[in-house]
Length: 60
Image 1 (cartoon, rainbow, N blue to C red):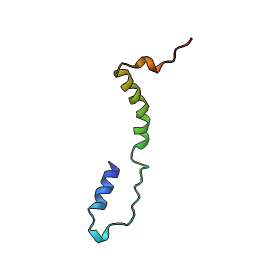
Image 2: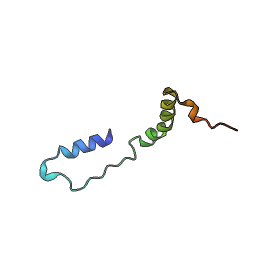
Image 3: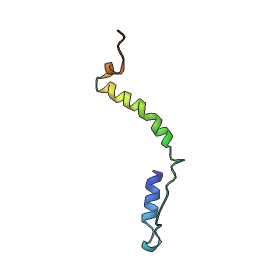
Image 4: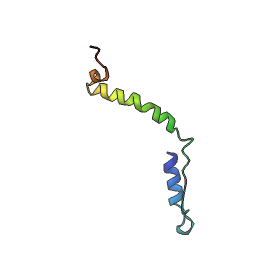
């Protein structure tokens, strides 16, 4: 959301006033929270697809 807002702000500037380079700071954009949710979402997807048995290593 923060990235989209910054891009929109830059593109709305008049042609001669657009910056040559722009840096988007992602430190406060909840990236860490989103990244921490990925492993659990991946496991949930595998379970819903019916492949939960491949998540466990068989002991022989």
